[in-house]
Image (cartoon, rainbow, N blue to C red; front, side, top):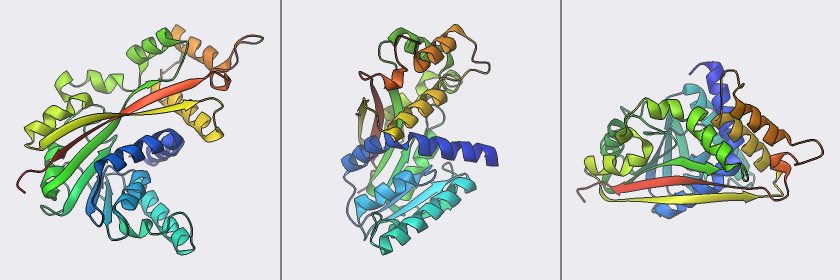
Length: 284
């Protein structure tokens, strides 16, 4: 990525974290990672989930975060170091950050020997929202020992405009940030078809599960900002002049003397879902 692209990605990751964090933690909890195990976070970004993974495996465990963008890896490393310092001083990060390391690498050619890890995980990266999952999945399975777990997860749906369902459906279908990526790949390579790729890779005990998140008014400031950021990230047009984009801006701004801005409506609620697919590396 360029410096500007990396900075934008960091802003988006931090902005969305109040929404993503509870669902990501629920998925990690559901994996039941063994205490003291060693794992790989593929496409770790700035390390937001790597710390949660480290908490899950405990102080005797080890988590390696990998991302192709050196700028994101640098931020992840700095955050881990700051968390370690907070832990040493008795802060919230005590015992977690010391088990996390980060490095630059390509998920299509992981720089690790066969069977290095007990598990591997990827959120909103491997095969997401569409693309070649077979290659990265084979690499993740290669570096995980027989009997270990491979898991990928991704944000798969949202309902953010209550009372304006038709508008939201049109926005999703015409100018969603996902649409160009989905259109470029056949249906078989969309993220929702991940279980097929798991089985083709020879993984056993493949299972898929959806995890829901929900927020309601009154919205904490961080959640409100995260929703506004998410809307701006999902529904983008070069000129923003289509009738649907104009309608979206009016819904978000409110009507003078009428409906309040949507995110300030005392009846506002939003829901969203992430999907987790997991499988076991054969041979144990």
